[in-house]
Length: 136
Image (cartoon, rainbow, N blue to C red; front, side):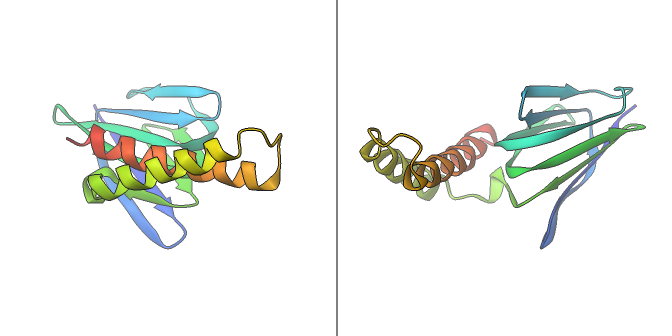
C-alpha cells in the first residue's frame, strides 16, 4: 500500500507520484504520514518535506501553505517549492550565510519589520539548504 503525493505551487506541479511515507513540516511540528493515516488538514511551515519512495528519501523545500490527507492521498498546496535535488548546494549555503549575517545585525531590534523580513529570509534560506543536504 502506498500514498499518492501531490505538491502544488501556484506556478507549477512540483511533485506528483507515489510515496511510502511523507514527513510534513507543519506549523505545530513534523507530521509523519503513512498509508491509512486519518484524514486531516494542517498548515505547512517554511521547511523541508521528506518523501520515502523505494527505500530512498527525497526532499522538497516548502515555503508555507496547507496540506490535506485523505484516503491515502496527500495534497500539499504551497506558496512555492523546490525539489532538493534541483537546488545548487553551494549557492544555497551562501544564501544561508548571508541571511544569518543580515539577521544577526538586526538582533537588537525587537519585532521591527526589517527583523521579521530578515527572519523569513533566513527560514527560507535554511529550508533550501537543508533540502539539498537531505537529497545527498
